[in-house]
Image (cartoon, rainbow, N blue to C red; front, side, top):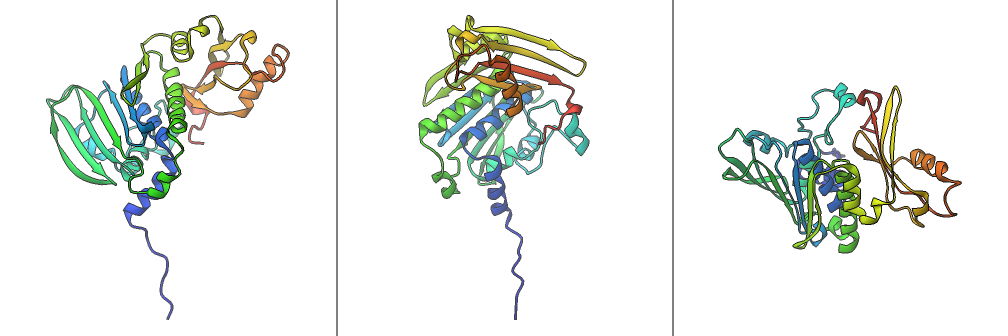
Length: 300
């Protein structure tokens, strides 16, 4: 006699599978945590990693913090404060919105969260391992949120084995740090790796942020860009043609402060530079396109 063979996966297995789509490497978790800190209104964000994020990813911010209920709820799948209905997808002004990242991280790591609102006398301290809440209690702390992700993929060894070398994974982390910090020069950032400070970025303007990230030489290499139309505005900087590189290095496009990869836009810039650049050279650019959120689908 034939038996039914289709079964619902246990939540623990489903969460691990879903997590693999959202969190592919340490840099994926770094991106999500930095964006959460920005959405919380933080003006100071500190990123600390050890072993290229394999053993520790920690983000400390001075943002608005969370209530004890919200701190617990943020680890549930599809729990978000950013949208409440499908149409909200077309008016998004925050970085995160899907409500998947924290649940995904909690499914495949050991997570310690501390968070406090200015209006609360005490903060909340939660410890989660593999989606299981191990402890939750009140704690004394400064306003804001501190989250530590330890031993990423500790319960998915096959996934952990696919991670690259520490230098390779660190390059991905630094790239995410660049992308997030570039479009938020008004926010101070630090990046510390294995107890050594890599970046200490002070709040300032975009040009100061570019120089702080990529070196003092950029003080002389940048030309400002400012263009407005009825539908979009473009702000930022392009590198002088005389400083073009042999590799595609500092090329950054953003839409409403959100980093994007778009071959058409990159191709358009390179076409504009075509007659100015030596053969096989590439320009640098840091451009932010601002457009009404209702005109784009950021979910794609």
